[in-house]
Length: 545
Image (cartoon, rainbow, N blue to C red; front, side, top):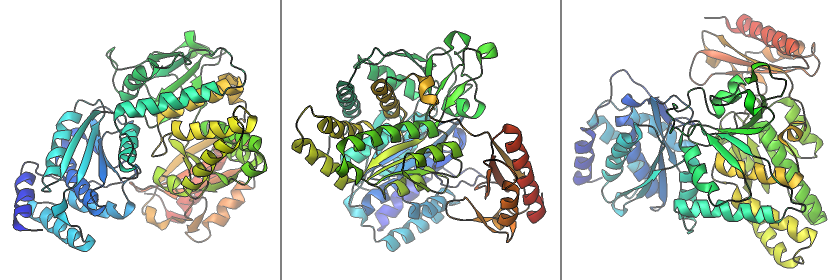
C-alpha cells in the first residue's frame, strides 16, 4: 500500500468514527445491530469488499444491507462472494478486526498487514455491487458502503438498488459466470423456468389461490412484479408495507415459524386456504394453513423448511426414477441440522435418500450439499435451496438431446433442467422456492393439506440453560452429540431411552453464556419431560449462572 492509498483510507475513515463500547462479530448473518450504530461498520465492510474483489482477480463481489427478520430499527451488512455464496469463513476474523479497530491508524495498520499477507495487488481496482432492503436506514448505510469501497483507489461501487438478499446473490453469481445479471434477468429466469415446468405437468388442474404474507418487506413488492408475468399462479399478497404495516412486526416467516400463529391480516376467513410467509429480506419461506376447527382462527398448521425439503426431495426422486437406471446413479442427498424434526429425517430416509447432518448455519449446510450430484438443504426456519453439480447438469442437458421429445424420460430430464434454473443455487430464495412449491403441488394435484400428510412432526421442545462457561460444552461437528464434559452424553443417552422416539442434544450458544437443549419424543408431554431432564443434566455437569 502506497502513501496515496493510506491517505485515502485515513481521510474517509474520519467521516465514520467507531461508536464507543460497541463490539461486533461477523457471523452467518454478517454484522447486525441497531442501525444507528452501523455506519462505521458498513463503511469498513465496503473496504473489505473491495479487497475481496481484488484478491479474486477483480471478480464482482456483493454487499447487502439488511437485517433480514430483525426489527425495523436494526440493520446489517453482509458480503456475497463471486460464487454468489457467503463470504469465505477465512475472511471473517479480518472482518471482525477492522470493524472493531478503535482508530483510523489502527484500521490502516490492520488493512496494510492483511494486504501483505494475502498478497493483494491494490492497483488493479475491484468491483462491488451494493444492494439494500426497504429499511429506512438502508440508503444512509449504502452511502457509507460506497465511500468504503471507493476508498480503495480504483475500485468501483455499483448501486443496484432495493433488492431481496437472494436477488443480489443471484446477480453476483450470474455476473461472474458471464451471464446476463440484471434484476430483469433474474425475473426472466424465474418466469421462463416456471412456465417450462408448468408446461410439463401431465394433467393440468385449475390451481387454487395462494395467500402470501410479504412481512411488510421487499419480498412482497418483488412478488408483485413477478406475478404480473405469470398466468398460471393466483396469488393474493398481504402485508406489502404500503398499508402502514411495520417490517417483521407480527408478520413474516420467522414470526409464523416460531409462534405457530397467523400473521397480522390473516384470520378465520382464511381457514383451509394455502398460505405462505416470506421473511423481511425474502431468504426464508414457510407455508401454513388455518385448520377449519381452529378456535379463533389464529393457530396454524405449519409447513416449515423440513416439509419444503421433503416435497422437493420427493419430486426430484420421482423424476430420477422415471429416467430409470441411469437416473438412479445420481447421488441425491439431503443435508439437515440437528434441529430438523426427526419425522422429516425418517421420511427422507424411507425414500432411500442419503441424509447427512451439518453444523447449524446455512454456510455449513451449503458446503455439505455441494458434495452431492443434487444436494437439497433446508433449515426448519425455511432457509434452504437445491444445488446441482455442474457435471450432473451437463449430463442432464446431454440426455435432453438423446431422448425422444415428449417421451416420459425426456420430460423428466427437462423438468430437472428447468428446476435447476428456477431454484436459486446461490442461496435460499423465498421467491424461487415459492414458485417451485407451487409448480410441484400442481404437478402432484395436491392441496396444502395433502402435502402436510407426508409425515407428522414429532412434538419437540427447546430450552436454554444459563451456565458459567458455555465453552465447556464441545460437540461433534454435526452437533448431534456432546464430547465434553466427559460423561454427559452417556447421561443424555440414558434419559433418551426412557421415551418413545426420544431424541435430544445440547450445543453451546454462539453469542451468550447459555447451552441450548433440544428434545423430541412421541408426545408433547414426553418431549417437555425429556428437555427438562437434559437441562438438569447440563446444570449438574456445568453448574448454572
